[in-house]
Image (cartoon, rainbow, N blue to C red):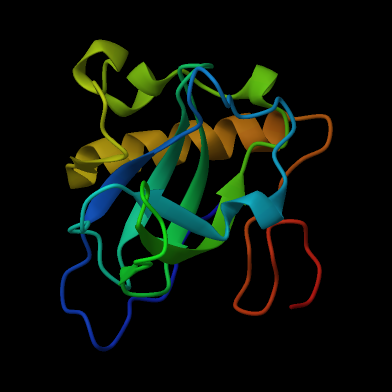
Length: 159
């Protein structure tokens, strides 16, 4: 599977991130729904910026399962006590079933290093390794997730 998102013209260098999804109380379900990958929240103002790319990590599964693009700048919601900061995402690639998802170690990240973070910066090599592992797993899923084109979601529907 080939992956080549078009770089944003307003951002010269993209950063790469690992977005931690789910908690012990609210784990990510085994089926990945594209609509669940439309935003990410953080307790503090994130360093993540529009145009950055990220690998999604299901914490209770200890697996990486999606590649997303950050499509909105972080916004603060003062009405919320926790998880006040949120930014919009566009799913690019996902494993449809977390039972098929590669372990986070495939991206050179170890679960014990993640602590209580909602996002962690990745090196370009870690991102590449994670993306490649997710692409390989997605192509092997019984219900394969598709790479999103410019006007399609990962489910292949027009947006």
